[in-house]
Image (tube, rainbow, N blue to C red; front, side, top):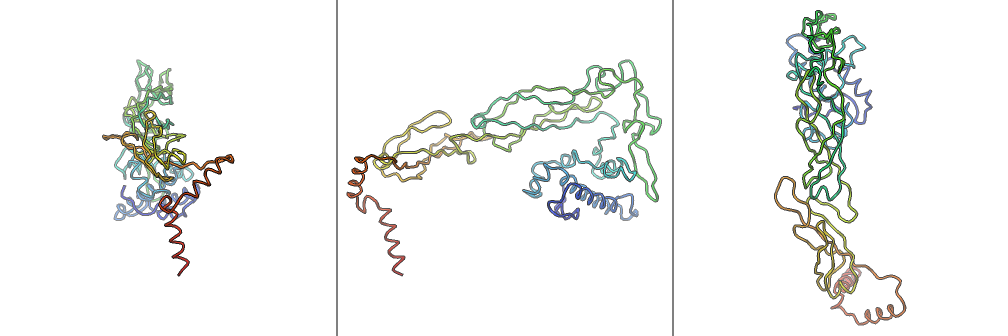
Length: 383
């Protein structure tokens, strides 16, 4: 879309406005800038304005799109939704029904946006609706990939009438009210507006003998079971598109697509940063002082890692290739191991005595950080 002005500014409402306030703002502006209510020489300008306010309303009236816009601005909409998706599900027609305009505004939007917008006018088979589904997967499933079986409701083309809606052996007849156009033209004052035909409800045809299996709808709702391959490397917010697994289109039209949004569960031990993972491992003071080896958990099992002499608490070590496999790419991230030196607690008298003797034997060479800190303190207070 070309709109870059703030959507709230376009509709003349404050950020945080209620759904009713957003709807009212759009309704007033749509009546003012309706292309059929302006002189011919201003029609093009009115269409652009109508397009702008309609896009703003389509986003702000949808809770999910509105959240994306409030958080990321236009980038959050442009990166996630196509032009068609932006308007999908938006309620335009009902706004004007109380004024006697019916669903004609959907048809006007269809003309402005290049056709195919109105869901009421059909002339033939049309593409089915896209579906969305959310899946929660484990941390390991995101790292290595996983298969998930899901169930979701969707419309299927009727097997009996093959989507036609008419009982087998019978045919549809052309609507006498609209002559098969699916719309009628109604004059209101000095302008005219197209409305969905009330007789055929925009179909253009009338079914005198509906299919008994689907009651003339041409489709029926079922529960679909589908196995989904989730690739390695996905993360929370990743979206998978499964082509042709959405709803069947009216009149035997092609299927829409299924979009799967992923939510990766937290892990009790690992924390993800991009394709790297971080793990905190506690070690005791003697090991940190004299060095040695520790057993470290990874996504692929435990490995031994060397801890050099004099390791400080918070030191981070890197295990190459022990992280997350890169999505649609080559290689794997790393595992970062942060060692945390554990301070002994509940010491007995002998242990306390030994530690005191050890502390007394230490000098500046053994504790260089302490010496450096005290030197800085002395310099600071001498000023």
